[in-house]
Image (tube, rainbow, N blue to C red):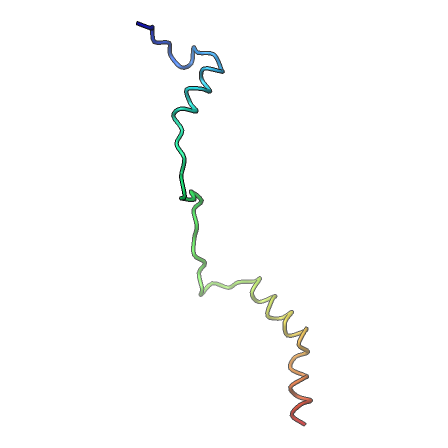
Length: 68
């Protein structure tokens, strides 16, 4: 019968071996917490993208020329 030796008195190698046996895998589950963004909240990035798109499109100048 082997004697029990507490974990803190074991060598680092034995502690590492013990802890590695205790670990489990998450499998297909991703443990990262995700949150849904608030659609009503002001989004500065979205506003910047809208403005840059307007500058690229020329503030609708193409549609103005085509209408004449």
